[in-house]
Length: 639
Image 1: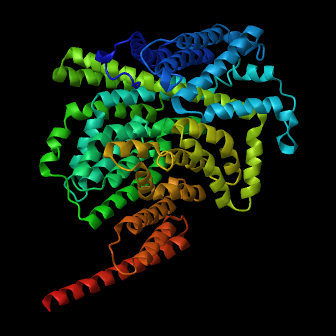
Image 2: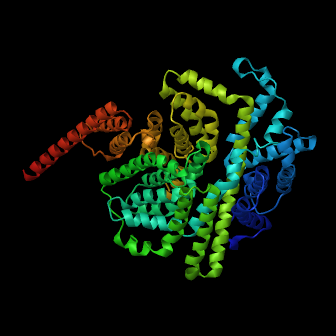
Image 3: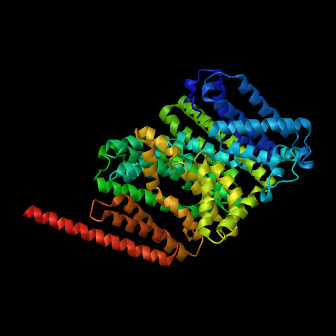
């Protein structure tokens, strides 16, 4: 939901009411219009942009000083511009298709105004990054003829650029906006409906029932619940807020340091973006971009996801043993009989099952998403009405729709702005120039090329959501990687991983900051511990790019062999960072375990073999030292 709205009862001003019911209406439109109305692509996208950007302008004020419940003249003017410009596109759709580049003076004026408003809405929702890049490319169009050599730009008029950005199906109304207007919106609303059905609490209870009785149960429950909830929520920050408000205080109470408790929640929640089935919507976008089955995409994503959480889970386990921390008290662990009930699980399992089944049967993402949302609504009614009554259930559904609608509105301006940026990259020919630079610098060294390619999504991911970062990275950086022989699935997953990691890496580390706030911890320490816990995620993208067996794109024997080696490597890395006791030559042991784990992750049998020898040597040396120290301690006690 928007920040100033928590429920229907707290609506006190006209602006709050407009935002709330606008979110509900937007969600209903997104659930019905793409499915039941036969509109042309431009018409559907213009409706989506009009509602989404208008709602974002109202829900996210131009500055913090203007935050409040009053409707301002600025709100009315900007919303009027958005509506007028999109109504113009809606009614001129056939002219645009039949006479491309035929915008009149009024069309161009509306286009300029809409572009400015969209960039401002994007700034309000997620910050300056994309608006600044768009402005830079417009300046490049205007002044590019003055630049020397490779970067000199000739023959582009501003009229041509504005026609392409506004008066066509390329810029504002391009393919990314088309995805946003259809299945992206549906799956964001789907996540809100699953949460309303009790998804967050059910995931926490499932995780506690699975792990609570074991050593390190609270932290392991945080990892499991965050992975489960993050797989459907699509937002790492929301994931931290929902699961962290329970798991972090529990970890603190049972002896975990606040910084470590917050770091566990931050890195586990971040991993939800690469956890099937939803994967922050990126799985569906990958399927569209690559022309592959969605089910194949989530299978390819499964191995890196397994290795990610192996590293996190291993770090938690080894740290727990090292500190001698206990399990969750028995009276705080939910009973399986209370969790595995139709009322608790049906709202999660049945809609997700319908979604996957329909996709597996070859139905479109739009159809599968619609029926999944419809089933989630029906199951909320069936399970909640007997528990809380009809009136409260209807209120719960309305609030879920508002949450979904406002969440969609938050992402619409940035996706549209990214569409503008992608269009400008194509117009100006920036992409092949950057590709040429990457190929020139990394042509002799594929490791260096991958390192260069990871910088852009990592930096953008510090301030942008995963989806726009992923889309922008694809337009700029996938072509040179494919030219260097990188597998296409591995290349897409490479950018998704790096788009995620900016959210837990200092100095921005949004998820770490939110988790630190809940734990009452130092956010910078939380950020660095998160990086240590998630170290596998910073390594594995390079390795599956080098050998696609780690994303299941090889023969079964290679996939199994490299996956097993990487699994042991992930545990070894975690043990080197978190598991060693204060034995003699402790630093050397850490280096041996870490180096061995790194080599085991490397998709090469020779290097993996060397890594295995290193890890086994370190293990035997550590065991011998501990045995020797135990014998001495026993002897001194007897003496």
